[in-house]
Amino acid sequence: ALKPPLEPGPALLSGGGCAWVRSGNWGVSSIAPGCPGAVSCPPLRKYSRPGWTGPEEPAVATLAGPARISIPEFSLHTFIIFLFACLLQGCVDHPIVLTEAVCNPLYSRQMMSELLFECYQVPKVSYGVDSLYSFYHNKRQNWPCSGLVISSGYQCTHILPVLEGRLDAKNCKRINLGGCQAAVYLQRLLQLKYPGHFAAITLSRMEEILHEHSYIAEDYIEELQKWRSPEYYENNMHKMQLPFSNKLLGSTLTSEEKQERRQQQLRRLQELNARRREEKLQLDQERLDRLLYVQELLEDGQMDQFHKALVELNMDSAEELQSYINKLSLSVEQTKQKILQAEVNIEVDVVDSKPETPDLDPLGSEQSLEDVESINEFEPLFAEEQPEVEKPVAAVQPVFNLAEYHQLFLGTERIRAPEIVFQPSLIGEDQAGIAETMQYVLERYPKEQQAILVQNVFLTGGNTMYPGLKARVQKELLEMRPFQSSFQVHLASSPVLDAWYGARDWAVEYMTREEGWITRKDYEEKGGEYLKEHCASNVYVPIRLPKQAPRTAEALAPSRALTSSTGNPCEQA
Image 1 (cartoon, one colour):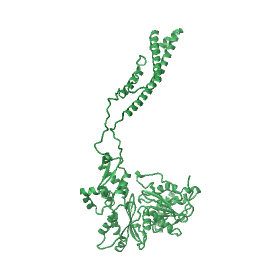
Image 2: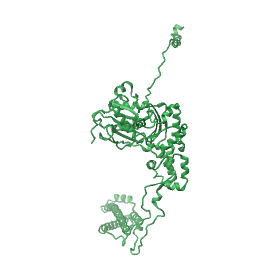
Image 3: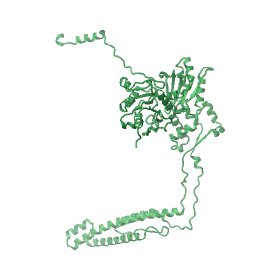
């Protein structure tokens, strides 16, 4: 049964990333387990049923993702249906907090606002960016309102400069690499290394390896040199066990199992022979009845019909007809006796007896040959055996350990897969890595603002949970910043869930304010693409249609002259 809808009042938080969707209301302190994203994921990870959460369970989902994905309305439509099952009352009387992609296109926001206000009758809605919500949640005392947010997720990585608490959208940059590309790269590496386990090296197992066994090297080249040492390889190599079956192909059956198997095969053969005898008896009986009918024509003196029937039967005389009748009568009697004998002797000793071979008769030669052929196929199964002579056959032992054969040895793959976010050229991508993009963004500001931004470099997103990532970013900043300059790098307390917690904190703080909330009146007056900015939102850039310049008298003069010149032909004449 459906759970009753939420009581009017509390805001529903909705945010979905490329990999997971979570839902909840602002009044709960815990988050329900997320479900895979519906549309933003790659084809191998598409799912069609996000699930259902009730009123006492969280009801928030996130729909971030690459800005190049301009169809979030399709991914959230299915989610909205599950989230607002309380539509049985006709509307959703709850404010909604949604996350969207960085620099989300106006058309996507317009479609989502139209869906919420027109279809679900929500009172007001607010849009924000998941990484900025995470930045908002991790604000501590004496933290500057400015900073450089590095958000790395399942599909892409964003570099977002924040000045005075607002996003500087003009200088935001995106790298089209994330956890998905790292998992695919690791899958290809291990499939080339272990071609015998090609099918077992799946994408889900690669994601598990990335989360549990991979790390970011502080110095990639130096770390690769360490792996050349056998001692370092043995101490740092990880093993992953693949599933396998311990059942041996060469295992033998016991004598009791063999006996039971023979009995089953004999019963099947008996059923087959009995069915064939019945079919043969029915066919012979029909032929015999037809021949007896022709013989009755001869006895009744109907010679014309008798000779016509002989021609149809391809016979020359009455003597030949009588000979076929005698043979068929004998064959029918023999078949009936065999059927009765088979019904009496149901239990047959497998060792001391062989399957019955039907007799060959002139009229049923075709069926008899078929019986013989079928029995010959089963003949090796019923060879006479002497139990006292049979010797036990030892089980075939493998020459190697199956468990060790189905193991993956993870060496340099632990650092090669996550390294692509710093060196996209490893997978053939013509893009800049995190360090180069971060330096490019900083160089677009004057030195004073650069010093402010690097004082709060914030890492968030599921792809920033690799051990060693914070140290690697610190090393890259140390190389690009001036001598003896200071900087600070912070990692989100929970890179995966802080976006939801930040949206909850924002909803609690701004529930009674008008800042950041788009009401139905705003939607009707300013359109569905309208956005009220706040500390965790995108920058609103309204659509500016070019105005048509007024037509001056000088521009109208040539048209008037042309009109006068193309007047009435009679007047011109």
